[in-house]
Image (cartoon, rainbow, N blue to C red; front, top):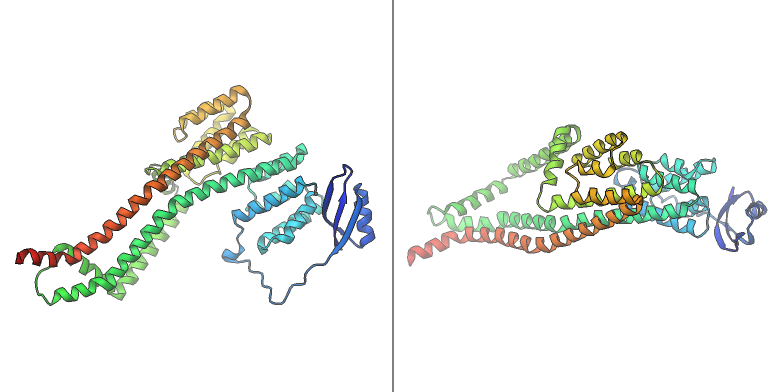
Length: 410
């Protein structure tokens, strides 16, 4: 089979373009005329031969598909379908533009499944590690309603909002983590380079050093010992491994860790607002797709890894079948803000749940962004004071014997 690029006009006189598979040029022309296309322009697509130097790395981090790549994929498909291309032609074009080998192979398999008569949603379902349940449900609703372009646009909008929330969390954590790392590096440099010079200078004096200075010198000697460095690195690796294994396999520990994170000043508020924003956006999209409430809530239990939220959503999902209003169920869960249940109640009364949930998602996203901005502006001076205080305390501790000697002379 050969591939042919085509440009044409459809039955509504709209310009369309894409790729068609055929044995030869005449068969490609007949296939396009069968679709009621006219003013057809064909050109054979010559595939670039792979060089022997082309290496497809599919293992480890090189074999992962990032959320950014899924977003770009969704944007391209939505734009092409909205422009009049068939979903098959759009997928073929996107596959040719995809650089990630693993994802390119996945898109190729999706194209093969569609060529065999399967729907797009059922083909995407085979790659649930890339396309979650909400994504597949939205695509399926678009196929059933004949408004796939509209639902693809909603998917892209949702992904962009989710990405903005994740980027906000990362930016809020990046600055303090960076400053802490820089502070630790400065402290390490002073301990192994500066403190030994002072220790040598004070050793010739033969007098007892002040306690802070002696602690600094003892810490420096400990770090300069090679065996102690390996002990420190081993301890860090051991603690990290124990935490990872315990978090993965012990539910109580994972629950306590989730609860503790929500109780952190400021950061706990960020987690709550970002989770509620994502949950509201997910529910709004699924409501618009016509998914029933019970299934929406089940999907909602997977919106966050935080066990406290997962347990709350599971209880709501189990109780919804009893006929209790959704707003009442959310009000009974203290982990959710009180205004969330009130806003959902308004949506229940007006009958516009998808619009109300979209408004809720927008409201909480704005609240989240406001908290992140406030946190960033507050953290900057605090971290500068923290770094300055640590380094200043070390410098004072080193010069304390000199100050003491000066006081004795005076």
